[in-house]
Length: 575
Image (cartoon, rainbow, N blue to C red; front, side):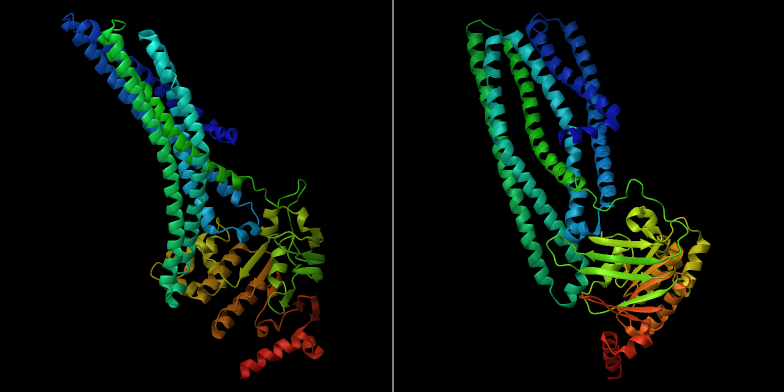
């Protein structure tokens, strides 16, 4: 794990070495200052050398300036190093998320994903900056002060440094507890983010059911668990910090006591003791730095571990080495003995499906809920991978086609239309980001939404709210159709795209779909059977598989499942 973390420094090694160089200058200055002070106390002040006192003070003032510049560079450029590493990690994890299949998002809360991208990586910034810097400065200060203190009074130095193994033992002893505590905090933070995202997304539902108090109670439970985890983590951290603190206090007491004893017995003079006291305080700085580093290490590495949890997930749906581009698509789709289940231990959703959709034809899928109609459609663009059998497009196995090429040639319209937060223009452009203004307008006209858009104060630049909340269902559906016109795919999948609309809007959208379907192979999942009477073929899918196939009139004459479904809906309409 550490090797993977260090690899993120490579693109920024120049900035890293600049940070380390000026951190080294800070350490050298901090080690030099007590020696200047010792010389002043031992020789310059007692001998009345006012000229040297002024010169040395000016020299020290110049060094203060150097230290100021060094501190600025370390504080600014060092943090910038951390920000750039965080940026690279966030870029990588977001890109990796794009490669993961639907099954990952089916089983992972959105709030958890957001927490890993935002909160966890923010903690890594501090570790990426302060971690190497604190370790480097601490080593320079510890080694430098050790040799200087040894030169001043070796016996006292050996006593002082004998405490280092105690500090190391204490730090290691607390490390595991801190690691577990901070990992727990990350998990609870993800839960709070997930609950928050879910509650805000469903705010209209909770208000309509007057369930605000229930939502508050749910959030408070998660918030309490998060606060409790934080409390426990700070308790362990407090034990660590206070333990280091008392060891530091004991060290100062030892220096004063033994140093006073040595001065009393003329083993060392007052100047040496003064310098020694300053050096011990500087010696404690790296100890305190290491204390802070331990906290940052646990916090940052807990976040990095969660980052790797996602990065280590291998995409289950990938291109073969010899995968090809899908070109000159005619549009024939063929299912050969296709079987599918979502998880290994779950029941089979589709079993031995055999179906051929001829190029340019419109085929409708009907049947009871849970029969696998949507699942069947999601297998074509490889949102999920078939367990057995093959799906062919123009005689080519879809697993032999590059994913981007496959999905580029398929247009999907779902019942629950998703529009991105932004403007109408941005959402239509999603079908083809490089499209011209003229192409956008033409797509909107073909989707019968242009006149509505032009009537808005800002036209195509109108903000539609989060997920298009400021638009009606029909308006959102038409924008999604315009988006597809802009994409212009040869294969089209309409997944109950009008079932949530009123009859008048449905009829208008249906005309847009007919326009969209011209010259394309179209697969329609229909809830309202009246909308698919003109389909070239209707396929009745049940949990037992394909039960019936034929045109509308043929299936009515057959008097089977389709006839029963249609007559039931027709009867309800009359009533």
